[in-house]
Amino acid sequence: MPRTARQREEQGLHHIVVQGKRREHIFALDSDKELYIDTLLRYKEKTQIRLYAYCILDNHLHVVLQETEEEDVSSFMRRVGVSYAYWYRAAHPERQGGKAIFRGRYMSEPLQSEQELLEAVRYIHQEPVRQGLVSHMEDYPWSSYRLYITGDSLIDSRLLLDSLHFGGGYAAYMQEETREEKHFLEEVPLRYGRSDEEAREALQRELERRGVKEVRELESDEVKNMLRTLRFQEEISIQQLARITGIGRGLIQRLK
Image 1 (cartoon, rainbow, N blue to C red):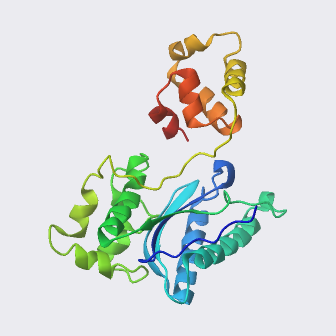
Image 2: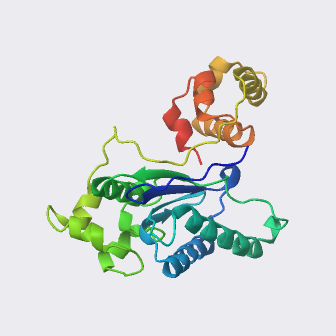
């Protein structure tokens, strides 16, 4: 079934998430992250698309863009993705052969107002802290957080900085806690479509002769390793794992 074209939004603002195929760490090396940022900025310069924020982690990235009359978000992301994949394969010979490195087409969420834009930028700048990678946003080198502090012209910072001129400023706003009830586009697991029976069979293989009720009695590291295997190798969804093991979704979702 052919894909339908993405619709242009009135504001043209989009919060976008790009993932590695099968959750692979296609941005694992510093050189990978640097390459994607360089590619993003190079095509931004060519197309005049507006770039408000980015944050790159090992297996996914966030970016906030605003399309223009000359360039829509779909075209821009396609150019960036094709270019990055070409150079990524050259840098990683084991990935030769034309296999896709991205999980299909990127995910996109339209932002309908300046306030939603501000909240999305704050959310993605806080991502490395939420993931436990750093203690402070300014310590993470692969996001646009520090570019706002330094006033770097590589990104389109003026709109947000002007909006936050009053009420404490940029740094103070970025430190505010994101409202829990607010929905943001996140990296999400693939929808594998396995039956619960298949998921339980995979769980039983991992448990060997032990029963499902014994899961919570295992050592913490053993449980986490088992869950990683079931989630990433056996390809069982977070929701199913939580259902068949009785372990909270939060713990499973935090596994890397």
